[in-house]
Length: 478
Image (cartoon, rainbow, N blue to C red):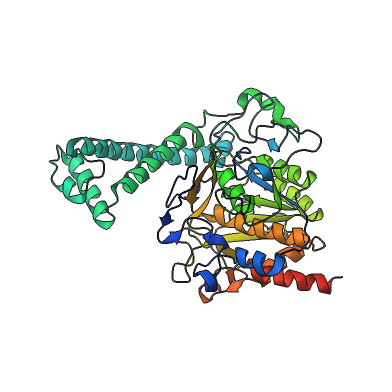
């Protein structure tokens, strides 16, 4: 699973003294209205205030297939699914055996390399690149630590680095690089955290993602032959950052004086842990989708992607099963800033056997808070045919494990905004099919010129418009 982009982070403790990030309100801007509030949210609050007060609705189960969810988070706990047949069970974990869970897994290139010599050559090249990255950033990190010690400052400036005397040619190179970086952006702490993040990511590539000797399932591989394996540990062995953040965007309790307001006011989150730190296995994605469908989910959020899918047919069959059962799938478009029409990521709505597409599938790109030249988030994938719509995905504050809150950016944050909206529509207008809900969401977007050739709908999703249109759909389909 690709981790969310942490463009800005603010940890918030009890009392929730929310700061502003890049001039954008750190809390709930995704729910605001462009005309009324000046931020390009989806008009969630306007929807509730003007369209839905006093209207009957029902609870909708939204499955979040991710890397784990903190089911005890203060702003999420009331909206976590409980198995009616087993009150101790709140979902399922496919990343583990009956006895234990794991955090890391390989990338697909490693799995392929175990049986293909040509793929092994490609893996060797990737491993060497990761090794070089780790070595380079480890040296830079060591240099920065030493500079902090020498200057006696926790946040040294470009001028402070100019005053340091380099001991050799390598230090001179690191010094010049650091000075140039701080002249562009004087925030040393941000620079340091970026360097540390890259170094740690490269280290994890070497230890786990690209390590052919590492296989977290080898010792209990016999347990993975069945269609249902794993355990009930939906949190996982480490802080469930990504999944908890995604779940909060969808269904954090509204207007309770804590944290944030989820988009949906009556959604129940079904946690399904199937996405490791690394790339998800096709088999895990497939059984996770089937588990969601079989346990009553009407919306499935999938905020993950990869570019190799050797057992894609397993996923396609599970998606077809979801379509047959009238389930809407929401998927993030990816954070590689590429045209998805030219480079296909997985999973996607196109079936490999050429039998068609998943009609109740929405692919979501990420947008920013202002209606300006940066409306398309700089990291977001796009595609006139491949991406259906855009939704807020930059500097989105949501829930974290341990009753904390943090702002993250990524299409991983945009997809649950749409999943929350889909849950609202399905809750207030339960007669609508999954395909109709998709159509409503895409038809009702706020159209923007710069998005007309970047996605199918040409706009940013709008909750107020969608619920008005949903009411008309109800009238037409009585």
